[in-house]
Amino acid sequence: NGETDMPLPFTRTLRENDTGNDVVIAQNLLRRSPYVPKDVNFTSGVFDKESVLATTKFQSGNGLADDGVVGVDTAQLLLDLHTKDNYSHISSLPDGYSYLITIDVFSDRDKEVNATLFGKDDQSVLQPVHTFRVRLHGKSYAPNQFSRNGDTPTGLAEIDLNTPEDDVKDFGPYPINRFVRGLDGNLGFLVPHIRNGLLVHTGEWAGWTPDKPMPNSDGCVHGHPTDIDKIAQILQEQLHVKARNNTFGQLPYPYKPQGLISIQEVNGGV
Image (cartoon, rainbow, N blue to C red):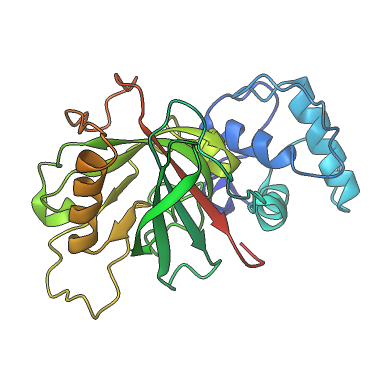
């Protein structure tokens, strides 16, 4: 098998001393294997000796040739077995954040689902303030959450309200919520350095009406225009969230994020 047979997001065989985002993804998937010691100490983004050893343990535990190299079969099995992060929603909003959006997704991302926006009361108890329809399906050519333009990743991330995007057709005329920094699950290692520019937004989609499924995104969370408008109003008027000047993906993000987004898969499979 050649390099062209590697399953996305992998585009090359990973060997000792290789570096890059694909190494970060492989290391995080290896950590989920029951055959890899929980205290494994990788140098993030470097396929170091620990990474080689973890790969051999994963391979031998799963009946593959234990050569310590992430080739086609090892990469595919890592994705098949360990794409799912088993992340579960947080139950309270930590100090320093003003709002939380929770979404339960299915492995079949063609199914649109409900999201809920929460604020918190004086005792920091979560209070639901708006429920809205969303679509978290990436582009059909991107097979998973780790691939460019693939499905919206699961996990927990900081988000922040930004002023509208310039491209009204693709992003709508309303303030958007930007994924800023992953904290847990797949989002924890993907955002922002592997997947940047994920947003909660709408669009002025050609031919779309509210009774139709929303179009697939590049990994963003798509919502109906009325809901994205209402969320921006609630955040600013009720929850005292500021709409930051849109950063258009610039890194490092210059503001303290005001909210969190929590996305968990609620059925089996990947």
